[in-house]
Length: 512
Image (cartoon, rainbow, N blue to C red):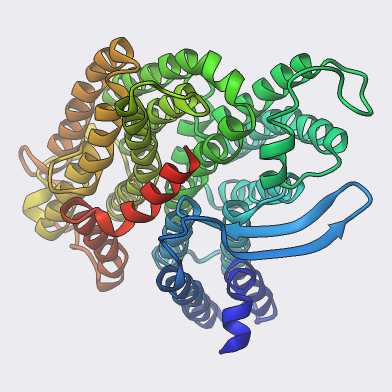
């Protein structure tokens, strides 16, 4: 037990990779064994994260379960890991969604072993990124997570999977090039890649030339800021960097879309909160209004684009851009407020609320988007179409599915009493005094959220029953086991959000 307690973070991050190795050694033709063992092994990180959850010292609200080992001393890069109240909820989201996505994949028949191995490797990459406290380690996990998703789309995706996987990879790689160059300049000029150390020495280096480069500090900071900004903006994705997302979602297998929307989009938003704003407070403050306008554009244009879709999965994909726009708006408030001393304490309180709301929205959107993509997969597996014009009257034939779809859609819509409402309300309330115009314009996007959700529900569930759908079977036990944990979390976070918010809010308050 002492070994587990002393190595809790490392065990949580690398257990999925060890599980992937075990699965890889199994015979390819033992499909049922591979599925069941993968599912069983994917449940272990939940236990480990719950151990962290109950042993986390909320009062301290600092980096905990810290691991520090020399890794590459010649360039000042170390294996430095740890989590706080921002990364811990995202850890929990990741370890919950991964086994549910694996359970949702039991219908996969081709290359089952490789499919499950890729999922487990991707889990390690996502957890490693959320825990990274060294820029080089952060970048390693950032790139590492690209590869499994690329292959999941390319090998198990829809008919345009080659195009979608290539676009996904190239877009993210394009952002990563500037990110890597900036990380190198920062680390080599400061003599360390350690994020907590850089928040002191890098942030407080404001003039002169950078050691080893001969370049002006102001110029390097401006260029590095925009390189970081674009890399994470592509991943969120913020309009106009969003065009890879609908294609990737539409072509990915159901479980791939669940993880892509549920966790991978959050890596970009997490990068803003963890790196961009703390490392570049001055540049972030000066460009916060740009971020706010981009967030508003994502909310409005994402909403209108979603309403214009007749492919159900593509509609849900565009809804992610709409919902993540609220996260961006909350981050814009953080960018404006972080590092400034306000004469009015209420302004700081608003900024903390908006930032906490943005992190909480990451978790909430992860749950509702994963649920929506899964339910689109449920109907597609039976009808073999996602064309909303083809459906109609499905509720009469599949009443349980219809009820669950309405519940999950309402969570995505932001119905009071469900999770989406709490985080979006926090962002709106916290943003009002900073970005009133952008927020007012964003309400158009909120109106369109209702429009596209009602369109999806109406076209699928209501209207006359079509003859060809009369014999569709309702949801199976396995499908219920996937969706009910998500629904329970949506409801619990809507009724009593404090069980996650206390971790987030304490850390954000200390950060400010």
